[in-house]
Amino acid sequence: MKEGINPDQVAAYLQEHPEFFELHSDMMANLFIPHPHGGRAIPISERQVLTLRDKNRLLEAKLAELIRFGEQNDSISEKLHRLTVALIAAPDAPAAIHVTRYHLREDFAVPHVELRLWSPAVPASGGEPSVEYSPISEEACVFADSLTQPYISARAMFDSASWFGADGELLHSFAYIPLRGRQAFGLLTLASEDPQRFYPEMGTLYLKRLGDTVAAALGRSLAG
Image (cartoon, helix red, strand yellow):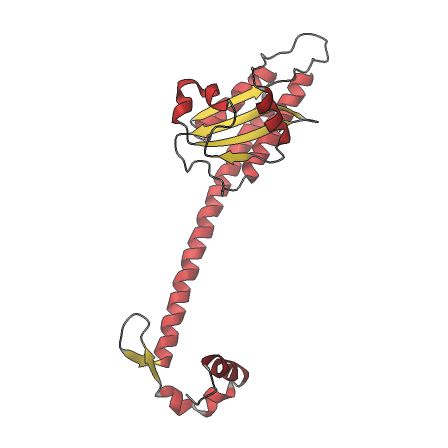
């Protein structure tokens, strides 16, 4: 290469002067470059075909990944729909809690589910609250009230490991979902022995929708 001309300048020239390839078509036909997957030289046209094949394989893999994600999202949406319908049909707060636990364990296959409520709401009738409120530390209440989105953790926050009894020491992934009205009145906690069941990089859109749905059902039941 002529002194003072670098590869970037050559590339820029060719991009700015595409007619070069037409004017020098004979040279292009006889130009050989290294094979991308071996040491032999091949015509530049063959190299272009190989490049297109590699790009095609990458696009096919990306498309397959998008299809897989779409199928997973469809499945999650259907499960959340079933839970929502069941919560609408629940006649009272205990039934809504039972429905939530059942669907998360049986339909979503979450191995460990714990739902804690506090700040009892007095029913409109003036009677006693319809559910037994769970003991929870002040730190856990403050933590729940600070959450605006579900929180994913590889370890139990505050005293929450004890909520799962003897299984608490075996759990390695947690999803904490605040149940909110004007402020947090509960915390839905999902847990698993599998460290990859809930992980920090995962999306929390469906967990947020789950929390909103359960909170709305319980808030309605506890207030009425």
